[in-house]
Length: 87
Image 1 (cartoon, one colour):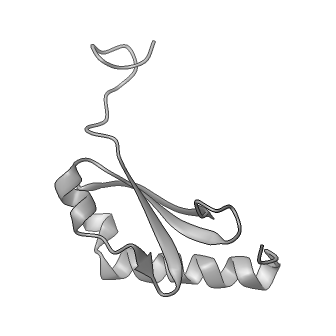
Image 2 (tube, rainbow, N blue to C red; image 1 turned 90 degrees about the horizontal axis):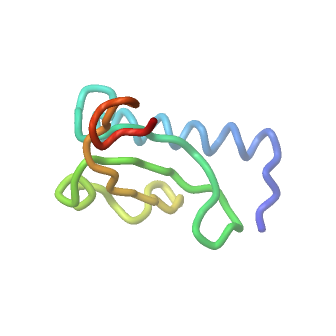
């Protein structure tokens, strides 16, 4: 596992911000959430993305600037208390 030093965390955050800019995350309603967390193996950082549809997922790469991209398809958000939402 790579040690997550403050320098490594800052570098991963920078890659995440480049990803946001390149894929127009802030202006594309396909993207619901993006962050930086652990990869599937748990030994390095990854870009984590929540999208609405499988088609949205297909637009994204498996890796970006050396980081794994983990994309979860979660559908449309539903407010708590509405049909299909939480309680």
